Length: 90
Image (cartoon, rainbow, N blue to C red; front, top):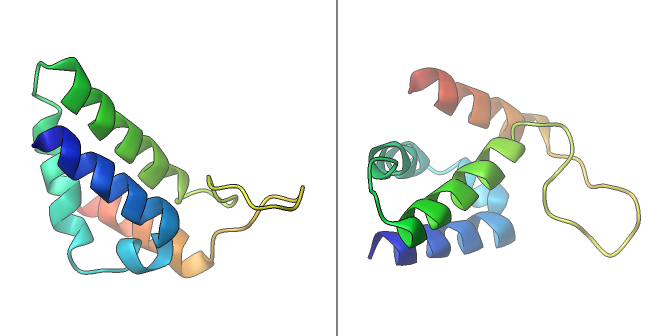
């Protein structure tokens, strides 16, 4: 169940990053991710870490998702700021 949740959350993050990160539910998802780090099974832990890796990457200037062109896409400042604020609150 944990693995499925974070795989779904990762898909939502990749395809709708700006909506997901700016959503008021993101703080709860991040709390769940922190709590799930204590799970000792490989698959749920891997899905959780992949989600956290991509979430943290949205705090950087370049987007972790690729486009069709060779130039990297930029994360909007409000998304980067939201990631930093969420991390500071936790």
